[in-house]
Length: 400
Image (cartoon, rainbow, N blue to C red; front, side):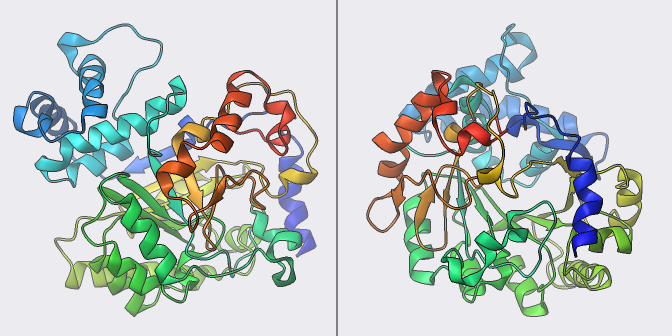
């Protein structure tokens, strides 16, 4: 295992201390299957939705002002020269294609909050995105992940556990109709969670976009049906190479052949039993060295999934022992999303995987009170006033 880590460490040592990881632009490469006419159709639908009085009448008053901003950024006749603009990226375009028209305006507003508020450092009453951790356990020890850090993943250290269905239900009930973008993933492999199938069933018809990230290693026929019957709209398979040896060096404990077999099974069940299911499948890899070839990735995975992507590498395996850096730019995650761990602990980011910056627990507070709390605001104000260096581990982190 040490040799496998050293292979990647050579590449990581080239990262400068002031290297920053831009959460607004984490995709390095992105490829999707799309007909040339789809973009025009999406643009026309957006134009229609932004003028639809019936859709506008159903929008919360606190978000009405966003409609004008969307018109200025997306409609040709109203575009203005602004430093920060909202655009429809290829992955978002595909999400729009799968929406019912009645949900389009609401989706655009919440997507705007997700993309623009973190850049303008604006906050309203709920996080644009909520990341729920079904479990912190993982069966892999990927070389670029904090699961490879025994001070975290060792069972005696107190960080490992599974979320109960009762806690999950409490979180979902609070988020429904308030937060439209949810991920079931964070520090662990979500499909390992004992109650994951029950949790998936509970998400049905509750959110505009529910995403789950999985390494696909424990993807069984039963779990595949649970995913396809649930509210999941985007399913991300984490795989970083098209070559067996390289894959297994990066994803320690992973079995390349088994992953391909499981993803193939998902495709077969989807096509046979759920041909009309509106879901996006994506293979997404972390780009850590030059041996990973995106064209090879596309050639292998294109036949099995809708999209293939590489995301930028974020050095988060052990931020606590990293050297302090000189970054002063605010971390946009403080305005983008909130994380809720398996035990109900609410945290502002997952680079702080040991919860040094926790703002409270979901059992004692609701999502709104946590998001607007003085503890969260103190973190935001430190970052806004270029004092992130006073916060540990923000002073060692490179996320902006």
